Length: 257
Length: 189
Image (cartoon, rainbow over all chains, first blue to last red):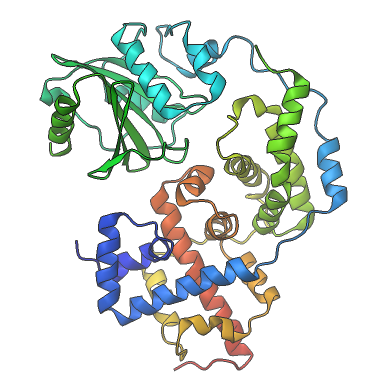
């Protein structure tokens, strides 16, 4: 993709900070190589960033303020809202009329923190074992609830429509990952079930490692295939116990749909 | 079994308290007022302490604290008349800004450092930035958050952070260039 000066001016900070996508970086580099003004703009941005980091003073925290902050803390840390953590997640489901019942095993997920891969593996087992009662079959509707409720990204984000590929949406809901609001959708095909999780970019640390493929990160954990990809201002995770090649063929078709 | 309050207090002390000075500096740069920064810091830590059960140890505590701080700042000080009016440069104005900055007879923009700008001038220029750009610069350049973390703090898409950071740095560059011109260190073409 070719880039013009106007586009580059909005991206110059990300270029300096190495925060462009691979495609954007290639286009930016090509543009800067051929544009004296934007090349200079880039040098200015880099210089300004370095100047800020080197020269903006760090004010020491006054001891009296530190004591004042500490003394202002109550004796006890407040207890979580009344009810189990499962009940809190039910409250988060908002206007969804049907009560969402989660496996009694679920509260134990959170003792060690929301390890995203572990969450996705357990989601697949729960969905496959029919341990989750889902209320909505329409992902657009789930995203709309999410957006109007607690979500931070627009439901107008790309929505992968798997129905055209032979997947039938069984249902979904808004089920947090730890304390991070996230949507949860289950699809079923002749080959097995596929779950999809979405949450806002930056809301959770993403797992490291994995195999990079077409801009996504692939993992295999306990026989579950997981694909994590950034979709605008959302992170989208697909996970399934379908055979790896079968799942990749489906997701590849979805990507080009 | 939930942790005892003593254990939670100890955990909060070990995990959250060490960021207090960084949070104070962020509060100073956002509010541009020492008293306001002190109030913001106290409010932030009180809220963090009360909602500590919502934080997952092992995730980015600084980003979590900065989110609380930023929300407190927005709620308490955004309507304050002492903050400059919000200026969202339109595309044409931004283009003129960039064009203007490129018409300075500086051999190399890195010579910005050679402008001998004073530290006070940098602080002043930062304080004069419109709040949205100042926030992006504070979170990314000074607090060293990633673009995704900064986007999560302010509740905006990453693309918004990218463009605000670009524009914020550009405005700062022009401001400091103007300081240097007034002191006779630079000449316009």
